[in-house]
Length: 309
Ligand code: ADP
Image (tube, rainbow, N blue to C red; front, side, top):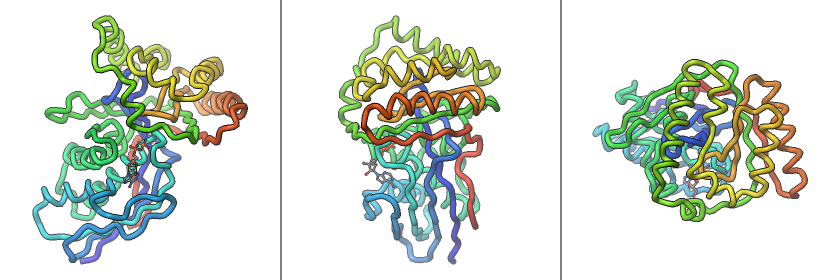
């Protein structure tokens, strides 16, 4: 046996302001490439990593750990080799680890003629996220695997719902190339919220979900508000407030922290506005002297894509 596939494993934006650990969406123009092969030698091997300095050891790489979880459930002796062509920088806040774990399990499942459901693949990929951040969260791996916007309705039991993607929705992302340690971005979060904050937050989550399904762009914009995490985490991101103001005054529907940062995302209606938003954000960041990347993307409703079989 020697079956092989080359895939595009997309970047994702988690949280989407109001939906900490439960909401996420999938990008179209930013992502890694991976070549996954089945072999008869029953072990999982990372044979190549290009574009990043990441561990080749299977148990230290999220792709290896996620595939091991899948094979444990598959229960037949089989081997897998993984090549990773990294384009998403690790620690960027746009789902670098999630792209690898989701991409790897999706490809192995495809090569095995799909014995597992999407929900099962999400659970395997979450094992990779557990390795990366100590927390088996699904808000990046779910949109990478299902495409579009996703909601984790429940973690126990795992229940992930794919939401609707309004067709003109575009996303602009700036990745300031600074290191925000995951431990720092976790340590600033408070573990208790007031009832008043909770009411505001779940009102916004409901509003965002309703806005996505009814394709009500104004409602989407009004709902992109985070009263719990953003006020605490944004202090770790240089010029966050100025970026947000620039994005909103250029017509963005909303703007917030992507995942645990330092990337910042803005949603817009139409590519013209998304480009204006990118220009405005670039203008703010050019003055800081910091290195940064800006991406403009439509929402990728397919998730992982086959490049070559
Ligand atoms: P992001 O902030 O972009 O979502 P994460 O912080 O979730 O990225 O993941 C980055 C961490 O995961 C780093 O510590 C990195 O060393 C580790 N890691 C292990 N394997 C991989 C991989 N294949 N791709 C990306 N990161 C990986």
